[in-house]
Structures are given as C-alpha cells and as structure tokens.
Image (cartoon, rainbow, N blue to C red):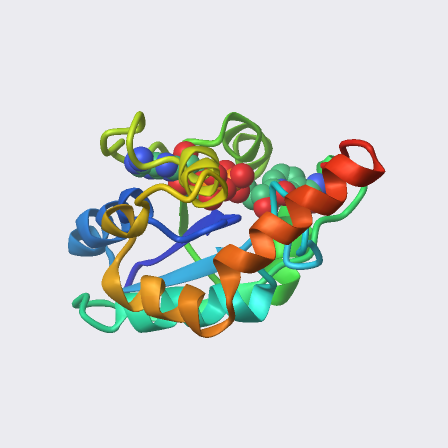
Length: 175
Ligand code: NAD
C-alpha cells in the first residue's frame, strides 16, 4: 500500500493540480492532499480560507479513482522542521510529490522520498494568472474544475478577491 502526499496552497485549486492528482493516482493507493498556508486568507495571494479550499478540492476529486485525505496545514516560521510539522498532522505517507523547489529541498533532507510531478500547461494553469483574470473580470472558469467554480461562486469568492485588492491598494500593497 503506497500513500502519497501532495501539498499546495490551491488559491484556487485548478486543472493543473487536478491533472497532476489524476496522473499520480495510477501509482498510488491513497493520497494525502495538504492544504498549505491554511492560516492565510483574504489577501491577494491567498484569498480563500482553508475551509473554502477544502470544499473546492473535495468536490473535484470525487470523480477521481483514488482515496484522498485532505489535511489543512498552517505555515510555521522554521522551514527546518516543516516536514515534521506536516507529519504530525497527516496520515503516514511514503512519498511526497511536488514541483515546489523549497518543498522538494525540505523533503530531500529527510528519509521520505520526493518526486517531481508532471507539469500541465503552466502558462495557463497557474494560480497567480487565474486570480488576475478574476480581478480583471475576465473569463477564468474554464481553468478550474466545474465543482471548484461552483464552490468559489457559493462563497462570493470573486467579489471577495476584488474587495481585498481594492483594500490592499487603499492601505498600501501587502501580500
Ligand atoms: P501551489 O498551489 O502554487 O502549487 C501546488 C503544487 O502544484 C506545486 O507542486 C506546483 O508546482 C504544482 N503546480 C502548479 N501549477 C501546476 C501545473 N499547471 N501543472 C502541474 N503542477 C502544477 O502551492 P505551493 O505554493 O507550491 O504550496 C506549497 C505550500 O507549502 C505553501 O502553502 C507553503 O507555504 C507551504 N510550505 C510551508 C513551509 C513552512 O511553513 N515553513 C515550508 C515549505 C512549504
């Protein structure tokens, strides 16, 4: 039985993330999906709460043929102990999959195997770009799974993001 670990901020969960999970699920029995930066929300870079991201992901992965465990993970100040922090919160896992250089480096310093995942059209499927399209009132819905679009609309996510940006611009830019 092989259980994998895949972490992201998922701001928002998009088709790039979804395709990675679909593809890696062939070689895994179960997958732990870590919602990183779970303590962050209501900023331009992290507009959605951990709970909102939980709904976006859990509804989307229902169609995939893999058992998933979704675990919110708050950031901590010390990178050196982040992997232990992750392990203290998640079901045990055998392998981590990531393309984030810091995440790869931190796992390489431990006994847990880390593998790079496939990349899907990064120029289109990229959280920063999708958030910018939302802010500019352009079409973004085709870039995220349908259940995620629904989850974002349910919480008024696009209006929230635009308000956050307006207030950031008013107060001077913050993260
Ligand atoms: P993200 O949502 O940007 O990406 C998640 C994963 O999906 C990454 O591996 C990324 O490379 C991949 N991805 C993105 N677009 C893709 C595409 N089109 N095709 C294929 N793969 C794609 O999230 P992230 O910022 O990488 O998440 C890492 C999380 O780990 C963050 O929340 C970060 O704060 C956390 N972290 C925390 C600490 C700490 O607290 N000290 C340390 C390390 C990492």
